[in-house]
Amino acid sequence: MGRECMRCGEPIFWRKGVGWVHEGGGLYAMICPQCGWKGTPYPPVTRCPNCQSRDVRDDHCVLPGDSHIAGYRA
Image (cartoon, rainbow, N blue to C red):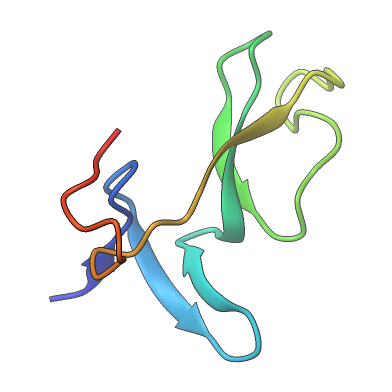
């Protein structure tokens, strides 16, 4: 059984030299408030890949289940 992000429940993986990342390869989950796109790209995007809006932003950083903030879930 794999690990999951305590914030979003998405599978997370250990990437050498980086640490825990979301399934899409990114440390951060991102969201576009214009069209609702969500993703975890690496490298992070500056425009929404769906609608090209520049309003795309970080939603949260990966939070492994064995974090020192055990029990935290958004």
